[in-house]
Amino acid sequence: MKKDSLIQNNINTDADASIKGLYLQKLRVAKYLLKAVLEDKKAVYCTLEYVDDVIEIDMDSEITSITTEQNKNYSTPFSINSEEIKNSIRIFFDNWRKVEEDENISFIFYTNTGISKEKKIGILKELDIDLPDVPIINLLIEKQYDEAFPVILPVFKEYYIQQHNKHINKNDNAVDISYYEELINSIDKEKWKKFFGLIEWKFGQEDEEELTNTLKMYIRYVCDKLDVEHKYVDNIFICLIGLIDYKSLKKNFLDKMVHVAEIKLLFLEWQRDIKLKDKLAVQNNDEGLDPIYEKWDEVNNNDDIRNLEKKYLMYVMILMKMKLYICRRCL
Image 1: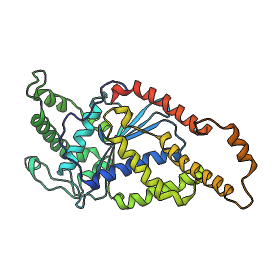
Image 2 (image 1 turned 180 degrees about the vertical axis):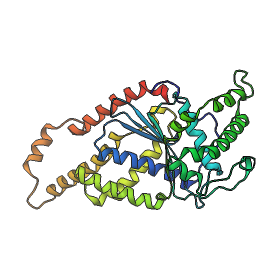
Image 3 (image 1 turned 90 degrees about the vertical axis):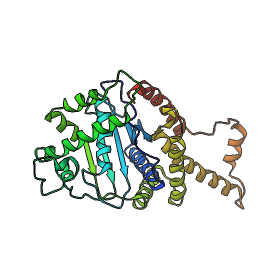
Protein backbone atom coordinates (compact mmCIF):
# COMPACT_ATOMS: atom_id res chain seq x y z
CA MET A 1 0.00 0.00 0.00
CA LYS A 2 1.55 3.31 -1.11
CA LYS A 3 -0.18 5.69 1.23
CA ASP A 4 -1.47 5.52 4.80
CA SER A 5 -4.79 7.07 3.92
CA LEU A 6 -7.43 4.56 2.86
CA ILE A 7 -10.32 5.74 4.97
CA GLN A 8 -13.96 4.98 5.40
CA ASN A 9 -16.28 6.43 2.76
CA ASN A 10 -16.09 10.20 2.53
CA ILE A 11 -19.86 10.32 2.13
CA ASN A 12 -22.30 8.37 4.23
CA THR A 13 -25.27 8.01 1.89
CA ASP A 14 -26.61 4.57 2.76
CA ALA A 15 -29.49 4.05 5.14
CA ASP A 16 -29.55 0.94 7.27
CA ALA A 17 -29.31 -2.08 5.03
CA SER A 18 -32.20 -4.48 4.87
CA ILE A 19 -32.02 -7.71 6.83
CA LYS A 20 -31.51 -9.59 3.57
CA GLY A 21 -28.72 -7.25 2.53
CA LEU A 22 -26.86 -7.62 5.82
CA TYR A 23 -27.27 -11.38 5.72
CA LEU A 24 -25.83 -11.44 2.20
CA GLN A 25 -22.80 -9.48 3.45
CA LYS A 26 -22.22 -11.99 6.27
CA LEU A 27 -22.44 -14.85 3.79
CA ARG A 28 -19.90 -13.20 1.50
CA VAL A 29 -17.48 -12.69 4.41
CA ALA A 30 -17.95 -16.33 5.38
CA LYS A 31 -17.16 -17.47 1.84
CA TYR A 32 -13.88 -15.51 1.77
CA LEU A 33 -12.83 -17.05 5.08
CA LEU A 34 -13.80 -20.62 4.20
CA LYS A 35 -11.92 -20.36 0.90
CA ALA A 36 -8.89 -19.11 2.82
CA VAL A 37 -9.02 -22.18 5.08
CA LEU A 38 -9.30 -24.51 2.08
CA GLU A 39 -6.36 -22.74 0.40
CA ASP A 40 -4.25 -23.02 3.59
CA LYS A 41 -3.86 -19.25 3.86
CA LYS A 42 -2.51 -18.01 7.17
CA ALA A 43 -3.05 -14.24 7.03
CA VAL A 44 -6.50 -13.34 5.73
CA TYR A 45 -8.85 -10.95 7.53
CA CYS A 46 -12.44 -10.07 6.68
CA THR A 47 -15.29 -8.03 8.04
CA LEU A 48 -18.38 -6.18 6.88
CA GLU A 49 -19.57 -2.58 6.97
CA TYR A 50 -16.04 -1.15 7.17
CA VAL A 51 -14.76 0.90 4.22
CA ASP A 52 -17.32 -1.01 2.14
CA ASP A 53 -20.04 -3.65 2.50
CA VAL A 54 -17.37 -6.35 2.70
CA ILE A 55 -13.59 -6.10 2.91
CA GLU A 56 -10.93 -8.80 2.65
CA ILE A 57 -7.31 -8.10 3.58
CA ASP A 58 -4.93 -10.77 2.31
CA MET A 59 -1.47 -10.54 3.88
CA ASP A 60 -0.43 -14.04 2.88
CA SER A 61 2.21 -12.84 0.41
CA GLU A 62 4.83 -10.11 0.44
CA ILE A 63 2.37 -7.59 -1.00
CA THR A 64 -0.82 -6.96 0.97
CA SER A 65 -3.92 -7.03 -1.24
CA ILE A 66 -7.27 -5.52 -0.35
CA THR A 67 -10.60 -6.41 -1.92
CA THR A 68 -13.74 -4.45 -1.15
CA GLU A 69 -17.27 -5.33 -2.19
CA GLN A 70 -20.60 -3.74 -2.77
CA ASN A 71 -23.37 -6.32 -2.24
CA LYS A 72 -26.84 -5.71 -3.71
CA ASN A 73 -29.76 -8.08 -3.20
CA TYR A 74 -32.44 -6.80 -5.59
CA SER A 75 -35.28 -8.07 -7.76
CA THR A 76 -34.84 -5.54 -10.61
CA PRO A 77 -31.84 -5.22 -12.97
CA PHE A 78 -29.33 -2.37 -12.95
CA SER A 79 -28.10 0.09 -15.56
CA ILE A 80 -25.54 2.89 -15.24
CA ASN A 81 -28.45 5.22 -14.43
CA SER A 82 -29.19 3.17 -11.28
CA GLU A 83 -28.35 4.91 -8.03
CA GLU A 84 -26.78 1.69 -6.72
CA ILE A 85 -24.34 1.52 -9.64
CA LYS A 86 -23.34 5.18 -9.52
CA ASN A 87 -22.89 5.18 -5.75
CA SER A 88 -20.87 1.96 -5.83
CA ILE A 89 -18.51 3.45 -8.41
CA ARG A 90 -18.27 6.57 -6.25
CA ILE A 91 -17.26 4.48 -3.21
CA PHE A 92 -14.75 2.50 -5.25
CA PHE A 93 -13.29 5.68 -6.74
CA ASP A 94 -12.88 7.46 -3.40
CA ASN A 95 -11.18 4.41 -1.87
CA TRP A 96 -8.93 4.05 -4.91
CA ARG A 97 -7.79 7.67 -4.98
CA LYS A 98 -7.02 7.57 -1.25
CA VAL A 99 -4.35 4.93 -1.83
CA GLU A 100 -2.80 6.85 -4.71
CA GLU A 101 -4.54 4.66 -7.25
CA ASP A 102 -2.75 1.54 -5.96
CA GLU A 103 -3.34 -1.55 -8.09
CA ASN A 104 -3.16 -3.77 -4.99
CA ILE A 105 -6.70 -2.76 -4.16
CA SER A 106 -9.57 -4.20 -6.18
CA PHE A 107 -13.33 -3.89 -6.14
CA ILE A 108 -16.29 -6.21 -6.64
CA PHE A 109 -19.89 -5.32 -7.40
CA TYR A 110 -21.88 -8.41 -6.41
CA THR A 111 -25.59 -8.80 -7.09
CA ASN A 112 -28.15 -11.52 -7.67
CA THR A 113 -29.92 -9.51 -10.35
CA GLY A 114 -29.04 -8.73 -13.97
CA ILE A 115 -28.21 -5.86 -16.32
CA SER A 116 -30.62 -3.59 -18.16
CA LYS A 117 -30.03 -1.15 -21.00
CA GLU A 118 -29.96 2.49 -19.96
CA LYS A 119 -32.50 5.01 -21.09
CA LYS A 120 -31.53 8.44 -22.33
CA ILE A 121 -32.48 10.36 -19.21
CA GLY A 122 -30.76 12.96 -17.05
CA ILE A 123 -27.46 14.13 -18.41
CA LEU A 124 -27.65 11.54 -21.18
CA LYS A 125 -30.37 13.66 -22.82
CA GLU A 126 -27.89 16.52 -23.09
CA LEU A 127 -25.16 14.44 -24.76
CA ASP A 128 -24.94 14.63 -28.50
CA ILE A 129 -24.30 10.92 -28.88
CA ASP A 130 -26.27 7.79 -29.65
CA LEU A 131 -26.30 5.15 -26.96
CA PRO A 132 -24.64 1.84 -27.89
CA ASP A 133 -26.85 -1.11 -28.74
CA VAL A 134 -25.67 -3.02 -25.66
CA PRO A 135 -25.82 -1.88 -22.01
CA ILE A 136 -22.88 0.22 -20.90
CA ILE A 137 -22.22 -2.18 -18.01
CA ASN A 138 -21.63 -4.96 -20.53
CA LEU A 139 -19.10 -2.75 -22.29
CA LEU A 140 -17.32 -2.14 -18.97
CA ILE A 141 -17.24 -5.87 -18.26
CA GLU A 142 -15.75 -6.50 -21.70
CA LYS A 143 -13.34 -3.56 -21.20
CA GLN A 144 -14.59 -1.84 -24.34
CA TYR A 145 -13.78 1.53 -22.82
CA ASP A 146 -13.74 3.56 -26.04
CA GLU A 147 -17.45 2.86 -26.43
CA ALA A 148 -18.34 2.99 -22.73
CA PHE A 149 -16.48 6.13 -21.57
CA PRO A 150 -18.42 8.72 -23.64
CA VAL A 151 -21.51 7.62 -21.69
CA ILE A 152 -20.36 6.41 -18.27
CA LEU A 153 -17.91 9.23 -17.51
CA PRO A 154 -20.37 12.15 -17.90
CA VAL A 155 -22.95 10.26 -15.84
CA PHE A 156 -20.48 9.42 -13.08
CA LYS A 157 -18.83 12.85 -12.97
CA GLU A 158 -22.17 14.60 -12.58
CA TYR A 159 -23.23 12.19 -9.83
CA TYR A 160 -19.87 12.42 -8.04
CA ILE A 161 -19.92 16.20 -7.85
CA GLN A 162 -23.58 16.29 -6.84
CA GLN A 163 -23.00 13.85 -3.99
CA HIS A 164 -19.95 15.63 -2.64
CA ASN A 165 -21.68 18.97 -2.92
CA LYS A 166 -24.64 17.55 -1.01
CA HIS A 167 -22.58 16.09 1.82
CA ILE A 168 -19.60 18.41 1.98
CA ASN A 169 -18.77 19.82 5.40
CA LYS A 170 -19.84 23.47 5.06
CA ASN A 171 -18.00 24.40 8.26
CA ASP A 172 -14.64 23.27 6.92
CA ASN A 173 -13.15 26.19 5.04
CA ALA A 174 -10.34 23.95 3.76
CA VAL A 175 -12.77 21.84 1.76
CA ASP A 176 -14.60 23.24 -1.22
CA ILE A 177 -16.58 21.62 -4.02
CA SER A 178 -14.02 22.96 -6.48
CA TYR A 179 -11.54 20.44 -5.02
CA TYR A 180 -13.71 17.53 -6.13
CA GLU A 181 -14.46 19.14 -9.47
CA GLU A 182 -10.76 19.54 -10.18
CA LEU A 183 -10.06 16.03 -8.93
CA ILE A 184 -12.65 14.27 -11.09
CA ASN A 185 -11.75 16.28 -14.17
CA SER A 186 -8.01 15.68 -13.75
CA ILE A 187 -8.28 11.93 -14.35
CA ASP A 188 -7.14 11.15 -17.87
CA LYS A 189 -8.36 8.31 -20.06
CA GLU A 190 -5.54 5.93 -19.13
CA LYS A 191 -6.21 6.39 -15.42
CA TRP A 192 -9.91 5.78 -15.98
CA LYS A 193 -9.01 2.55 -17.75
CA LYS A 194 -6.81 1.59 -14.83
CA PHE A 195 -9.57 2.33 -12.33
CA PHE A 196 -12.39 0.52 -14.14
CA GLY A 197 -10.01 -2.37 -14.78
CA LEU A 198 -9.92 -2.94 -11.01
CA ILE A 199 -13.70 -3.46 -10.81
CA GLU A 200 -15.10 -6.95 -11.17
CA TRP A 201 -18.79 -6.87 -12.07
CA LYS A 202 -20.62 -9.93 -10.75
CA PHE A 203 -24.22 -9.99 -11.96
CA GLY A 204 -26.64 -12.90 -11.75
CA GLN A 205 -24.88 -14.31 -8.69
CA GLU A 206 -26.29 -16.46 -5.91
CA ASP A 207 -28.90 -14.88 -3.67
CA GLU A 208 -28.79 -15.41 0.09
CA GLU A 209 -30.59 -18.76 -0.04
CA GLU A 210 -28.39 -20.17 -2.78
CA LEU A 211 -25.24 -18.81 -1.16
CA THR A 212 -26.22 -20.42 2.14
CA ASN A 213 -26.31 -23.81 0.41
CA THR A 214 -22.94 -23.12 -1.22
CA LEU A 215 -21.39 -22.21 2.11
CA LYS A 216 -22.63 -25.43 3.68
CA MET A 217 -20.93 -27.28 0.83
CA TYR A 218 -17.71 -25.37 1.61
CA ILE A 219 -18.11 -26.28 5.29
CA ARG A 220 -18.31 -29.95 4.30
CA TYR A 221 -15.05 -29.55 2.36
CA VAL A 222 -13.38 -28.00 5.43
CA CYS A 223 -14.81 -30.77 7.62
CA ASP A 224 -13.17 -33.33 5.34
CA LYS A 225 -9.91 -31.39 5.49
CA LEU A 226 -9.92 -31.17 9.30
CA ASP A 227 -11.51 -34.54 10.04
CA VAL A 228 -14.81 -33.21 11.41
CA GLU A 229 -18.05 -35.11 10.94
CA HIS A 230 -20.58 -33.74 8.44
CA LYS A 231 -23.38 -33.96 11.00
CA TYR A 232 -22.01 -30.76 12.54
CA VAL A 233 -22.33 -28.72 9.31
CA ASP A 234 -25.48 -26.83 10.33
CA ASN A 235 -24.10 -26.07 13.79
CA ILE A 236 -20.81 -24.86 12.36
CA PHE A 237 -22.66 -22.64 9.87
CA ILE A 238 -24.66 -21.01 12.69
CA CYS A 239 -21.49 -20.46 14.75
CA LEU A 240 -19.64 -19.06 11.73
CA ILE A 241 -22.31 -16.47 10.91
CA GLY A 242 -22.67 -15.66 14.60
CA LEU A 243 -18.93 -15.02 14.91
CA ILE A 244 -18.92 -12.68 11.90
CA ASP A 245 -22.01 -10.87 13.20
CA TYR A 246 -20.59 -10.52 16.72
CA LYS A 247 -17.23 -9.16 15.60
CA SER A 248 -18.79 -6.75 13.08
CA LEU A 249 -20.47 -4.94 15.98
CA LYS A 250 -17.14 -4.12 17.63
CA LYS A 251 -16.04 -0.49 17.44
CA ASN A 252 -12.31 -1.11 17.25
CA PHE A 253 -11.00 -1.95 13.79
CA LEU A 254 -8.81 -4.85 14.93
CA ASP A 255 -11.66 -6.33 16.95
CA LYS A 256 -13.99 -6.17 13.94
CA MET A 257 -11.73 -8.26 11.72
CA VAL A 258 -12.22 -12.04 11.60
CA HIS A 259 -8.96 -13.92 11.07
CA VAL A 260 -8.86 -17.13 9.05
CA ALA A 261 -7.32 -18.93 12.05
CA GLU A 262 -10.46 -18.18 14.07
CA ILE A 263 -12.47 -20.12 11.49
CA LYS A 264 -10.11 -23.07 11.68
CA LEU A 265 -10.32 -22.98 15.47
CA LEU A 266 -14.09 -23.05 15.23
CA PHE A 267 -13.91 -26.33 13.31
CA LEU A 268 -11.33 -27.73 15.71
CA GLU A 269 -13.69 -27.08 18.62
CA TRP A 270 -16.19 -29.44 17.01
CA GLN A 271 -13.38 -31.91 16.39
CA ARG A 272 -12.53 -31.70 20.09
CA ASP A 273 -16.18 -32.27 20.95
CA ILE A 274 -16.09 -35.51 19.00
CA LYS A 275 -13.02 -36.70 20.90
CA LEU A 276 -14.62 -35.86 24.24
CA LYS A 277 -17.69 -37.84 23.27
CA ASP A 278 -15.45 -40.74 22.29
CA LYS A 279 -13.82 -40.57 25.71
CA LEU A 280 -17.22 -40.56 27.42
CA ALA A 281 -18.26 -43.51 25.31
CA VAL A 282 -15.23 -45.42 26.56
CA GLN A 283 -16.03 -44.46 30.15
CA ASN A 284 -19.58 -45.75 29.75
CA ASN A 285 -18.44 -48.93 28.06
CA ASP A 286 -19.31 -52.12 29.87
CA GLU A 287 -15.64 -53.07 29.89
CA GLY A 288 -14.84 -49.99 31.93
CA LEU A 289 -12.54 -47.00 31.37
CA ASP A 290 -9.50 -47.39 29.18
CA PRO A 291 -6.52 -47.36 31.60
CA ILE A 292 -4.72 -44.76 29.50
CA TYR A 293 -7.38 -42.15 30.39
CA GLU A 294 -6.94 -42.88 34.09
CA LYS A 295 -3.20 -42.32 33.83
CA TRP A 296 -3.71 -39.13 31.84
CA ASP A 297 -6.21 -37.74 34.35
CA GLU A 298 -3.70 -38.32 37.14
CA VAL A 299 -1.03 -36.13 35.53
CA ASN A 300 -3.14 -33.65 33.57
CA ASN A 301 -3.79 -30.79 35.98
CA ASN A 302 -3.33 -28.09 33.34
CA ASP A 303 -6.42 -25.96 32.79
CA ASP A 304 -5.27 -25.11 29.23
CA ILE A 305 -7.12 -27.73 27.19
CA ARG A 306 -5.91 -26.48 23.80
CA ASN A 307 -3.91 -28.93 21.75
CA LEU A 308 -0.67 -28.00 19.97
CA GLU A 309 -2.42 -26.98 16.75
CA LYS A 310 -4.82 -24.66 18.57
CA LYS A 311 -1.95 -23.03 20.46
CA TYR A 312 -0.10 -22.53 17.19
CA LEU A 313 -3.13 -20.94 15.56
CA MET A 314 -3.57 -18.58 18.49
CA TYR A 315 0.10 -17.61 18.18
CA VAL A 316 -0.35 -16.98 14.44
CA MET A 317 -3.38 -14.77 15.13
CA ILE A 318 -1.39 -12.70 17.63
CA LEU A 319 1.45 -12.17 15.15
CA MET A 320 -0.92 -11.32 12.30
CA LYS A 321 -2.85 -8.93 14.53
CA MET A 322 0.40 -7.10 15.23
CA LYS A 323 1.10 -6.92 11.49
CA LEU A 324 -2.44 -5.74 10.78
CA TYR A 325 -2.06 -3.06 13.44
CA ILE A 326 0.94 -1.71 11.55
CA CYS A 327 -1.21 -1.48 8.41
CA ARG A 328 -4.13 0.01 10.33
CA ARG A 329 -3.56 3.53 9.06
CA CYS A 330 -4.19 2.28 5.51
CA LEU A 331 -7.78 1.63 6.47
